[in-house]
Length: 189
Image (cartoon, rainbow, N blue to C red):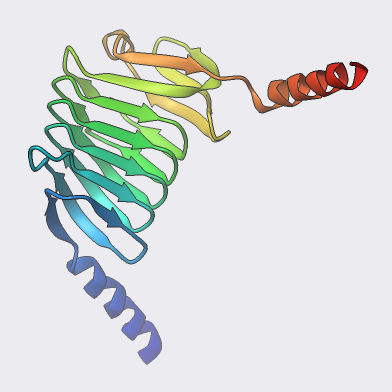
């Protein structure tokens, strides 16, 4: 029983140590990092880039021309992007609940286990989604992201959908067939 209490206390204590952090310089977020809100600003004339390779962040707030790249880890609540900042998502466990994309910011979605609630878009903000097999029924966008992961249950109104650019990439099976065809043509010559 003492071991269970110790583990519960340790987990509760580690969650209590989540802090807000502000980056005005290039930084990495790695396994073991646990942040509440990560604020990212530029330090002119330099552009700030934050790369997330693991860890856990409740929310990102990006400003100026900053760039956030998420390769792995957990984004637990969402992001708010402002000015001309860019958020690139390549992987990880990503939840966008109550996210707002402001000004002329850009979100590029390439992969990951992504759940997106109803986002808010400023008139100039855009989200680029790279994948294939997309379908939209007037409420949900479904398909596959470029890494093959499923994009499902994305709730979008027609107004939201106007801010989304779908970039169709060939399905993996199509790429394999094309590669095989090129190999056969090359072999004949």
